[in-house]
Structures are given as C-alpha cells and as structure tokens.
Image (cartoon, rainbow over all chains, first blue to last red):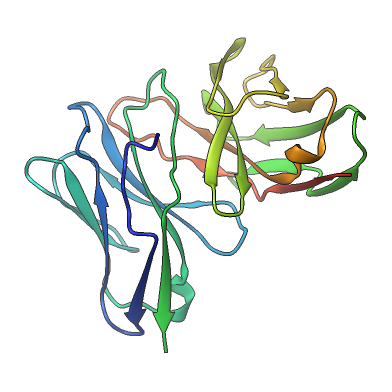
Length: 110
Length: 115
C-alpha cells in the first residue's frame, strides 16, 4: 500500500494557485516528502522535496505541517501546461521500495 | 546532458518470445529502478537496484528479471512474456547521497504490447 493519500482529481483556474494536498500520517523521521508530476505518458518529472522545513524552487512551493503528517504542493500561477498527474511519495533513500500510488490528476481550466 | 535512456521505445511481440528492454544512465547513480504503469493503477515498482550486483524485488516482480553488472545499465528481462505484461515501462535512477537528495530521473518510457 502507498504510504501517501492524495485526492484522485482536482480542478484549478488558469492563473490561480493550485494547492495539492497529501497525507502521509505514517511518515518516519528520516523520510523525505517528494513530489513528481507526469504529463500525458511521459516519464515523471521531479518537482520538489523536503524534510520538515517549507521549500520553494522555480517550479513550486512545498508546505509541510509541523507534525509532518501532511503536506501541500503549491503551484503559484497555474497554466494549462501544468495539467498533469501529481504524485506525492515519501522516501528515506536507503534500502527501500518506492511506492507511487495513483496521484492527483490536476485539471487547469482556461 | 544528464539522462536516462531506454530502448526500444515501442515494442510489439508475441507470447513466450524472450525480450530485453535496456536502460542506461550517464549520471553515475547508484540507485536504479523499473516501473510499469497501467491505466488506473499508477506507477508500480518492479525491481530496484542499490548498486552493482545488488537487486531487490519491488511490488510487482513476477514474470520479470533484472541484472546490474555495470553501474550505468539496468536491463529488464521478460523470459516468457504474456499479454498481462502489456504496459508502459519506465526506468529511473537516482543518487544515494547524504542530505536527502534522492530525486529520481526517469527515462522516456517503453510501450510494450504482448499479443
């Protein structure tokens, strides 16, 4: 079973901020939260990751709650090209499997 | 350019005919992995490798083999393909460094059809 829970789909108006939630209530202290997205049937693309502090890069921001049991990926100004499936995973990076789950299909509405 | 390459990109084959899908990365990554993706099921890990000569089963290893004889290559072998292995396959690699920088780089995918 996936270590994360995400809504199956979300809509967001073009130009608005898209906020994608992820629950990871069983996350351990050494596990990082990673976000990827997959456009059509292309290979998934890394977006951002974090441990406990909020993170920001040129693509997105990641907000992790203080108890680390959930996080939110924020795309600040969504465009039609952000239409994709977004995956939240947790990973320590050592000898472990990686479970992607089914992700959230984000629809950007013009 | 840092990349993960897969070959072939598209393959149609018949049941029982052995095939190999190659995967190669030029980033000197320790960790490599194979996934399959089927409609409604998301990405599921088949096998992964922590380093040369070290491989482990993922969630759906049945019917597949892998090998890791060199750091850069991680081929996926289907000894006797069956129609239920028709799928989109992705190879990925990532470093195993300290500091949590374990982002995976994915290949472009191989679409396999077994008739």
